[in-house]
Structure formats: C-alpha cells, structure tokens
Image 1 (tube, rainbow, N blue to C red):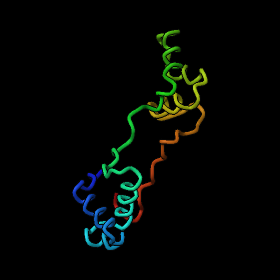
Image 2 (cartoon, helix red, strand yellow):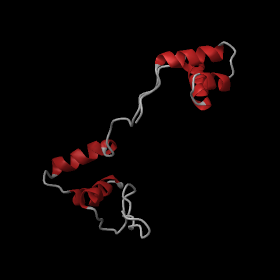
Image 3 (cartoon, rainbow, N blue to C red):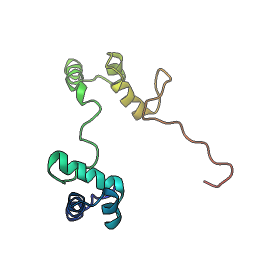
Length: 126
C-alpha cells in the first residue's frame, strides 16, 4: 500500500482551491488527480484538518464478537474442538474458521474467503 501525500502538498492544493482556483486547475498545477484535490477540499471544509485517515483494516478478529460464547464453551470443556464449537450453533464464524484450517467442510459448502483453484492456462505457460 502506498503512503499518503505529504501535508505540505495537501495544504498547498487546498490553499489554491480556497484562493479561487478551480479544483481541476489546482489538480493540474500540482500533478494530482481531480478527485484527490476535491476530496482534500471537502475534508478541509468538513473537519478543518487535512490529516490523512489511518490506512489499512481496523484491528480485530472475525471471532471477537463471539468471544464470550467461545470462552464459555472452553470453560465448560477445556478439550473442546472447533467442530464441536461449530456444532454448538455459533453462527458461521467457527465453521468458517474450521474450513480455513482444514480446507474442507462437513456441509460441502465453502467459506466466503475460500476460492476454488484456477485451472492452468492452455494458451500460456504458468
């Protein structure tokens, strides 16, 4: 993932737009996209700041919402398996986790994150 543009550039672009230059003209002058210049101007109007938002996914796991349920099952039976947890009707999260670990499922369906393998190309070497 690329880095955000510098604060100096953001400030100069927004200052040019606020000074009467059109968004397209400012984008051309500073060699950035029109949408980027427009987004920066909107951000400045809405928040008063040009600080870029944090990049990447927020931290957390798929099973965070089910932590109490899972910990309760483990307290009841410390030797509980993933398959037993999935049998205890924990939405789809544990079964999805189980499929990712073993690569198969008891129902024959695949997890949303799992994709079938692509066939090799016949026209080009792979």
